[in-house]
Length: 216
Image 1 (cartoon, rainbow, N blue to C red):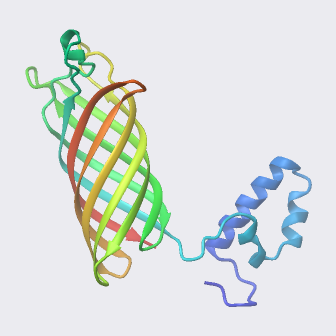
Image 2: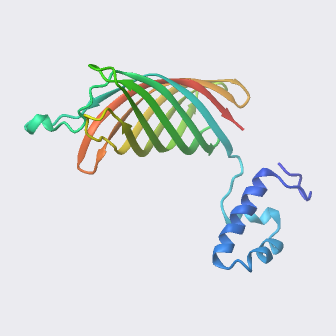
Image 3: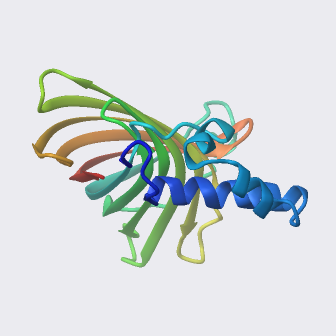
């Protein structure tokens, strides 16, 4: 945090200056430098957004097990199954990066898992990217619960004899965590997701996750 009146450059100030420069350059590149010269550093926040109290949050989470379940519609041919891949439960990881404070955060989550086909043992892969928001309720200074909701997309790399199952996805998860030291937390949780296209659900899934969170 810069000292009041000091002419210092902080990471927060640098981000704000870059974003302001890009915004003004799109309108008129010749005026961007002039705008930055007449706007003191302390006045940049109201122009864009207030980052006061928000920090960068990164988490790396292992997925010991994740399973898929095809959505079935009674009365349709083949029960309306669109996701016909017979896959064993798989494992993988989730990487999350966002901005927030101790109570709320917003960012992106990348999920990937590996699986095998139940009959042939052929390998399959799932990749997903979500825009995810999370909120935390602290029971004391160290223990908390976290609820997250996300929306994004999922893509599959399946054995050739299966039809494509890529689609839009929604995710919900809950976790129990503990702050180990300042800015470092550990948590364990579980989640569920659903994917498909508008008007047609392909399937559902569930998973368990455990990992660490760094807030800085």
